[in-house]
Image (cartoon, rainbow, N blue to C red):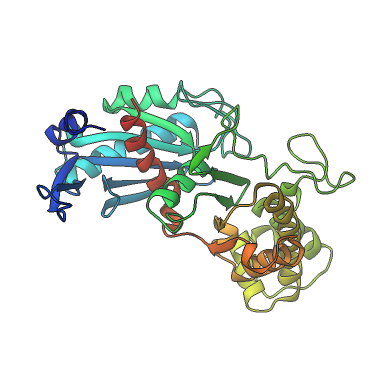
Length: 360
């Protein structure tokens, strides 16, 4: 850019206090240049994470350096969930003395498939309510709050924030996996976010690894999700426990959840370790195929399964490393959880707002 073009380009950002002069640079022979940075005290952004088992939102600043508030809410029907998010957000802004006019935008990272341009959640599986079909969440939130709203799938949001602000800043090729009730994947390739045609995020979860395997919710047989989701781990544990296998808990099998199983496995319970190890080994095998195709430099493994189980992470990454055709220095770097951990999707949704507005 010429200097005059640059000045015209940044003037709206300066006028709206999105960027500020932060320092004076070194001279290269002429006048010392002014250096600009994102204004940490400028407008706020809201990021919302809508997952299958919970929702949460954060209020942050433009460079995501400060979280002013974060709230977790249960998920139920679309109407109840979205109303709860909007009402709680209004209360939080009031408590913080933040005007809605000071909010640059709202980002929503959610489970796909989506119509991202229209802001519609189409027909996600395994939600708490079957009413989550063709929900125009963008329009509903904008009507209630009067704030520009953007929507993307949660894995895309998470990989974006890790690439721009987190542990992926130095990697041009990276992948993010969120493993819970389903398996959600976001991909950065050559510094660009890769989107699917339907803005879905579950293609890895529906990779077929056993053509004669168990039937999946998608209708195929032997998908990764048949073996590597919290729902399947719970189902297999309860089935074996009810068949007579002993386990280290006073709870009846029908009350055991995946956190219980993770905790028991970490403490050496034989049944829990067996189920977690088998599932993680299958995940690692599928991960090998994925890495051999896309060759990411960094792989972030996140979500409830990895958050609550070091064992699952260790077995999955070990199984993948043993089978990779690239060795040693060419293998990807594995990280458990990333920089932003449980807030990766909500903060990613916030980062998406800034990216979307800059590209308008």
